[in-house]
Image (cartoon, rainbow, N blue to C red; front, top):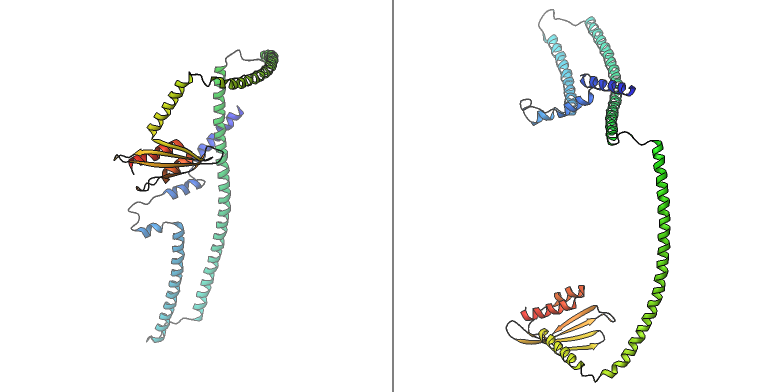
Length: 352
């Protein structure tokens, strides 16, 4: 209840502060001044719009004051000269004369006016200084009140949110709610359940240990079976020599030879020769689109002791200048030997 009363007091203070149109509304006045836009009839040209800036107006006022002071001085000087000339050249028998008493009277009046002006300036300076001090204090108070108002509003919103959350929790969890006794009972049940799970985990670990031992023994047995298989394979290889004269392998040999010949005829492969350990030469018979047959030789150079292609050279296309550099370079990066051979043969058949 005490917090609610403070909240209501803060809200009423904020409402009163916002509704009061006093000098405390410094920030709002500055915002209104900055957001003010001139109407079309207020100014005649762009220069008048520029003079609405306070800084520009202050500079113009200072220059005009200086100009008026000079103009006043020139006026007084010219007026004195005019009076002096009139006194000298006048034909009147009794010309008006300026006595020493008049000068003293004027000087006295001038001094009094200067004193009054000095006192007024000092008073104005004092008032301006007091105004600066008071305005800074008012601004600080305004900022402090504004921050306090924002905090009060934030706290009020948090209180409302907390009440709503509490209401939702009460609706979600109606009576009877969890008590200390029920919580203790639930804790005991969870402890018993954890103990049961721990026992079950130990049983599973024992099973895993036994399975690992069985797996190890079976691995040893598998190693022994592998050694036996190797011995059987060795004995089988030794006994292969006895089947050289077996007539059952002749059809298989003929079928394999025929398949190889068909493959070579389809691809146009005429000669396949291993020049060195890492160099292979392939000779193809290619027929272009005009029906002309030519023989090209493709030399493949591999990286030693690997299957990676290092370079390739195409010969037999001297009469028709065809650049295979882009094809070779593109397939070398991917190590695509089959794709490179297909692309070279296709470009040779096209003749371009």
